[in-house]
Length: 294
Image: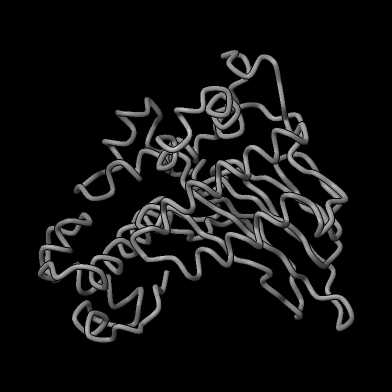
């Protein structure tokens, strides 16, 4: 099965999950998502499928996934050996301003983001490695710093991470600025990027077709083939996630929130919102501890 994993990096453009543990069966699934992602395995053996590659993984393996790159993580779990990992995800466009002043590092960053990478993993890292110490340090710092400083701390984390990867020669290249090194994006990635820029408007499949120079039939078919979700389901999920964020974090009127996320009809917005979350917009707003359901 292929599907889109709902990692909402548009409202909070970063995520650090440190030493997350799974001790039950973990089959994994094909999925793709927004943002650059680094997966470090502390415990667990199995394999990861990335495009047409199969990577055998074990404790000490670090794997990198580019934005919207289809992948599947399959780990063999037993009572004696759970699956423990650290995951760092972030939206690359948000952090370019932190990295651009460091010219050589900025080139490396753009290469990891958009380049054709010969290798997407590092093996046999230990918990004495620089990378592990960076993960541990920033897990502590992000947990204690002020909310207004978290994004800046994450920018520092990315710079430290890039320096460490570059020093160990991970996908280093003397020709990273070559246009030939740019990867070909899947059509589903291009479509997702278009939706990210336009989801707040009252858009149609015809508009997507016209802007991307692809037929409506092809767009619908290739999106489902590559992601396992329908285009409209993905668009609706994106809108509901943003509405959930605005309900929790702003005092905007509910009707205006609906308009801001692409639902000009208030009744329809309420109907769709309740279908996807189990709550009306007003109920969700009152319940400050309600999770982001999508």
